[in-house]
Image (cartoon, rainbow, N blue to C red; front, side):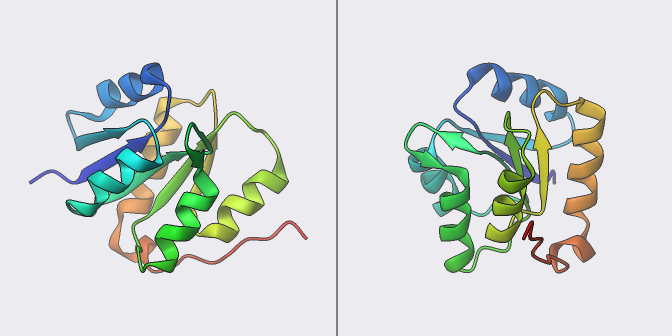
Length: 131
């Protein structure tokens, strides 16, 4: 049985690119906004979430904080076009397991996904601060 990977990104091109790259290894789930992501997650927790920072109905950090507050321990890798350490710090403080700046190399993303899906990685989240 394949592990489930959820992509939450408002760009259909990004979702398609990632789905094409990983569909042979993972069951791919896609959401274009926070509302559709919540519906997908309510049907069962994926093994990993790729979460865009900016979404049409909210931001990824707020979505992630809410998920963590409700007990979600699923690894989350933030995807963003913002190359800013303060943004990265906010994502990590919210509970992100990783941070990738767009455009990204698919090989590097694949390595990070594999690393974060390992059972030991699920329990080793440590907040990272820029202050």
